[in-house]
Length: 476
Image (tube, rainbow, N blue to C red; front, side, top):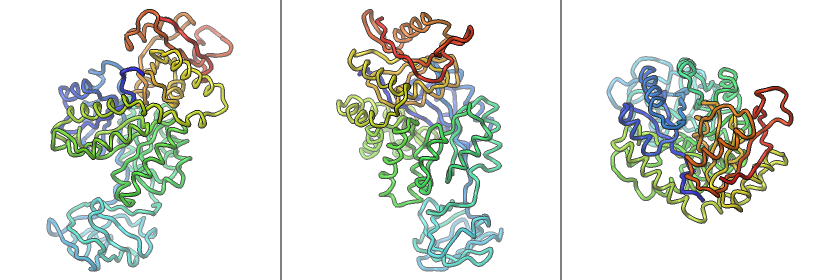
């Protein structure tokens, strides 16, 4: 096992970190991928952040845009705040006049027909609960189950209902156009309820853009297989999940999603409140450290910082702390033993999976310094990461988009190379990359995998096949 951090770190940029000095500190602290949150900030701010990241990146860094998605919110009140008492009747309606302690606007008439008696509406991240009594045309009659204060434009969650809404709003389409124009090739889709939501985005962006499905609605569990198949990666968005379902169910669902993603070889991200206390304090709680460690032990590809790096007082310190926790877990001898347990049972009867698993076994038997994957699309490197080898995975690719996408993937160190013209070029590039990244010495071993055509039909056809079908042992 090499002294390399396999689990990746994602940092969200925001007011606390949107300057070249802060971004440089985050990169040097260990960020692998940056998240641009399009729920906040304007296009000019996001454009400048993209330019600064690309100017500073010492090696390929991932950037993904996180679309806001539809947000269900109430309207405004006459007073800055109202208090709802337990048991009182409270109305949600389409009237755009300011509300009071008995009613407020809920400007989403398209979902009124989806509401049934006894359904619970959770407002302000679950702080206030309203039980639906009945729907009277353009008015929802509710009773306050959990009392509390409400102020302008608080959010509304409706657990257990598949709402008749698209995941892509007009704002999202505008933001998406901006992102594509600025060469962002990874998009996180919010409010995913059904496979059709992923397909709608895929029809717009095509196959060259990688889609991260944000799993924040409980109903996605009923169609998880289909969503996994259509997505390139998934994110366990625990903030909304925690509002939409009982808190005690979230860890169970998290493990289920992680397990499924690892089985099918799709990168999986754990997000929301991982080191939340570091928004205000220079160190996390023990519970937060354990939360990060648990995700790492489960074998996730990446853990994400949100408010900690976007608006907190200690963005770089949060990255450093997360990196320290990851490194400590990955030094545990039980870590790799647990990750690799039963992985062979999930492999398919294909030459690509057979070659990949053979490369892993070779690397362990020979104590190889690295598994070197030559890839154009990233599929060879993704297969190598799926079996969770103990050594670093060097992903060599001529495609900058592929390199930056692979920055998200467990254990993969992406590196841009030129086009391979021959077997000699490939072997030489593998050795040079291992020397730079792994500090190999003469006599060290690297294991090489690639997808090669069975026949070279014309000049320049080398390594254009997408199927992993070759493994080779190279002595430095």
